[in-house]
Image (cartoon, rainbow, N blue to C red):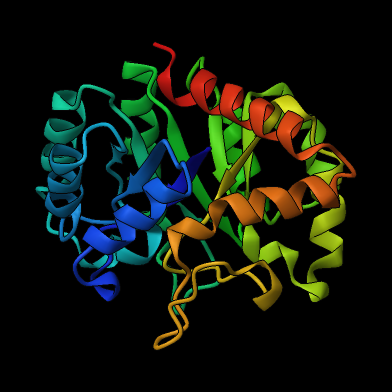
Length: 261
């Protein structure tokens, strides 16, 4: 079992030794820890050095953090990614849901990270929120890595799936979409080919519904990374599939996307 996207470096977790112990007890083998800005990249790197068998570091500039970065961020990001034994880029992307989005700055940051991912053929984890038309324009006019790209917590429409898949997209499912009110998005995931699916927690965010949570962090209503196996089990039910068979497919997809070089 592998977590395609989370933020183990998030300060809301505090010390992560117990968190990691819980993850290991749930047989979580690898997790991709996504940085969001220069403020947390070193924390991501430290986790990868402390838990090298578990943590795959991914460094990126999140669109929410774009307005607050110094101009040196591109050099710092390039250095970290190129020095990583398993270079991964993200979380990056486009967001029009945030207050006062700076479209020019977001697009410049995203295209820089896309170019770096192309150069290294690195796994690219992409955040898109209320910006699908914008993203599709860039997808159609730019080259993306040969290995494909990951749309984490995919929230787009079923109508976009065919073109996204043709252009190399993988889609990671978050337990948040197991909520009853997310019926429309559940139908979207039913339409995704199994060989393009991954599973994630996005911990400490994207909390699943109560009946899915096996490891509550109730004091702050945080999502625990060890909820991952339960999320995958309920995803199998959603897809009317066998849990063991789906887990094997998810593991193959994770290896194909993140580990094959």
